[in-house]
Length: 379
Figure: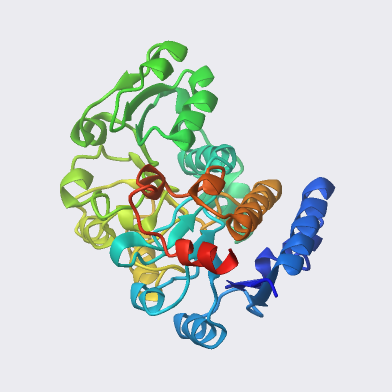
């Protein structure tokens, strides 16, 4: 009897009965998701968590009792190194671009796939949306109307609640990957002055968008830009990289934008500087540090800062930048297709089209992946 691969999905959100039935998603993607689940059910033994957000202890319990070969997860599902180290898991697929929620074991022997190249357009759109929301103070103005403060005495005024248009601003982009490039593509025609920093200078982008300027250090961007938008991945070297020293360089009334990962910014440095009025900057975030949802104590500190400095603009959105219906569906399709390819694989060559994370893809011939035992079991 042929061995049936055991797969544990840490959420029912991936399923044909959840995302596959969501009418906000185009019919073609819903049908594709149903088709892929039909294939999975024939090829594997499945365990789908009955809920969206299992705790770490629930995940551990499922892994211990079910003993899966493969895990399917997303960023809300932390997979601790010690749990993975003691398991038989040989592959993890995450329906996200980032993968810092997945612990890495000794030798990096668990194959990890992710879903790159899908969400850059929707995240770029979202980034621009929260920049514009912040620049035009739309949150406070909405609340002004919503709470009944718009009275006949304040019908319209030339010098109250003034905002600022974007085309007179200098935008600094930290990280010129797909999302950063897409932000430039959208904002360049508006006449925005754009500076960028990345590991490498992108001369192709400079030729395509004449006038964008490469800056080889963060300090110059933080000192001179009116809007600073973060688009770098969370790694050990980027954790807390936006710290007290960089924040203190920012212009008064500049906007700091984060749709990347919360831990890139040292939130405690930011809070202390705002509380002590050492900086006066506006914030547009949809990610938060150290954990999400934003911790009540941290939120209360921001509320107090806002109360004492009502002209500051804080645009805080629950981690939502990629929440376009078809984008999420495309991510799910890629995620499921990768799992099926992993199940069907017999050697490293069969993994060529799987979206293995970059650091493993570069070294795939050097790593002694656990999946090799699975291939022997299947043979």
